[in-house]
Image 1: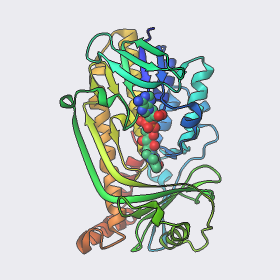
Image 2: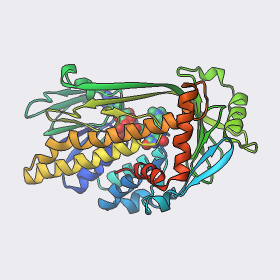
Image 3: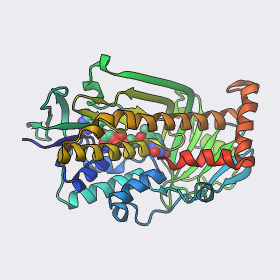
Length: 388
Ligand code: RFL
């Protein structure tokens, strides 16, 4: 069996890429380890940034993918209980994104792709990459009946997340990796609470907390905690008490919690994002903390760059896009890592003074204050929020 591109992984990177390749007239097969139901129920990100929305616009997919999704025109930063609003729409010249829960984006990408008769294979077990540095790579896997399949292709897109088979197939000495541990944890919960009026980040001496929309009836909350904290030590009573305290919202109702986990805030970048005929995209190449909401957006941005490069290579025998792929993507990746780190530092150190000491606490407060006293500083923030 043969195809032009084997896409490994049906997350935001893999499914965006598969749709764009279909629109570009480049054949591909998507191999996904899990079932469709599993992939469609994974709730993670919730914000498509302006650049991500532009990708779907430019490829003519906005109608199908973004219909009915509200925009995110403002950001509230609540400092010691005092609301401060950043008018993101005005400051960015209208470059706002859309609030779209990741699982809805995934469902819509799958529908759009499969409606067109595309080839997505779920429950593909033991995916393995072969001859990635040669002219004719192959991918093997077993289907749910245990039968072994081999697909020969011209290119492989490794979109299988931080723990997939793709990056692991690259010889260790061919990659430089950068890891950073931010030294904090985020307790994250999904709950059946109506979304806040605006995306909300709260800074106070009690520690950082945030409240974001995840659809019309659900919210994601984040609470700063010790890295590696045991969720068992955070009973529901403690969670709601801390959220009310940190968000300065006495009326926050205790509601059904549908998911709770502790995320250790870590960053990772692999350079280059290519080895031979294997191209890494999304979390397979870089992990960013949830602060700033850029993980899903970077995955979509990589897919866009890769789709354009593959279209030129396949249809016009023009490899310049593929040659530049890694460098083009990594420039954006580092910009976003810096943005995420900047926000993390400012929002956490401006709160709990014991985290980084009194000097850095005051530096962080100064940075924070500047967002509301200098339009240039606020514009710099919303510019990065818009992506690009
Ligand atoms: P994904 O989404 O992990 O998809 C990879 C897919 O590959 C499959 N797979 C394999 N398939 C075949 N063979 C193998 N060997 C395979 N190994 C894995 C997996 O089953 C999966 O379907 O990676 P992708 O496409 O690069 O997309 C990345 C984003 O999903 C990720 O960056 C975001 O979810 C990160 N993230 C957030 N990003 C945002 O932009 N905004 C947010 O607010 C946000 N919040 C979050 C997040 C991630 C979180 N967690 C749990 C990691 C909140 C959380 C809690």
